[in-house]
Length: 351
Image 1 (cartoon, helix red, strand yellow):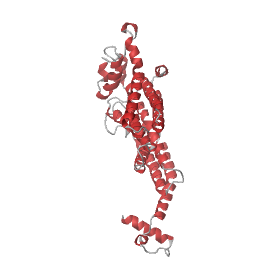
Image 2 (cartoon, one colour; image 1 turned 180 degrees about the horizontal axis):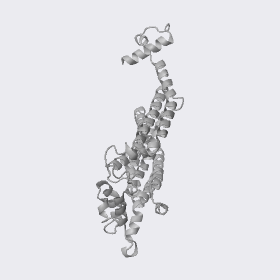
Image 3 (cartoon, helix red, strand yellow; image 1 turned 45 degrees about the horizontal axis):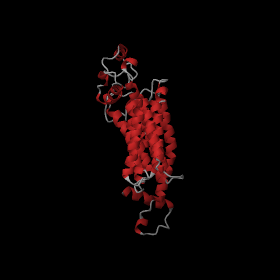
Image 4 (cartoon, one colour; image 1 turned 90 degrees about the vertical axis):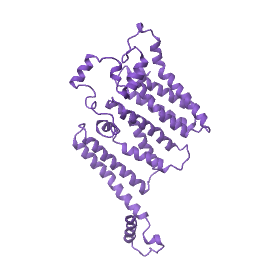
């Protein structure tokens, strides 16, 4: 199915992302209900995603496995590990099915496997499109490049001409074109993940919000490490990071609880909105992907939306803060409201 769908398009990342999101959904259902069938279904989805984009699909497996091992209802770790191993076996069978079928066909009865020096689809997948993308030897695995590719390199007309010069580094996805494609909401995702881990630290191991952070945070982290360390990266590859960023933002909102939110929560949310707007403006300043006026408008709208919320939250926090005299048992009932607020500020400043 995945191979037939890709035959109509030259970019397989959208199908990869769809299938991996389905795998994450099935894993979430499995860790909530303990359904082995759902976990095996997740393995099928990852296997089909492998058909779409090869090894990149397997990069989501550590996050899916970690979330299930953390929060699955099975009482014994041995049972959980057995479930994960069985799902991994399903993933391997589905992933390697097409490759095995191609390999069983005699070479004289099928086209030559591109991207390999030995007519092997396994070499193409695991070396040329796998390890070679990390080590940088992918270009030499398949022999000399075609004249068409050589001419495109010489003229600078490659699809990734604007990003090919960006070297591997730890901040590769935090600035420049790669960050501009996928990093707008990264501050909100980080704030949401930290908020869940801190606020839910005393919950049991099966806490669903914490499991969601492990799943989606692990998804983002593993992919980000490989994208940052790889020697060859097209800008559209980073689209695979966006579902994790969006899910972490949603998890953070879920952790805020029902409205109306307390003043402290409103303060954090408003500050996060301003942080995302500022980071987005920084990313836009380093690219030529849009007019400056759009950046200015985005900053003004963010400030207009978050400013009143910040002001209200700070005022409520001040009202909730005990005045200085009250901390020492002095009666403050005869003081005016402004005097009490001033005493509260003095306590905050003294700290």
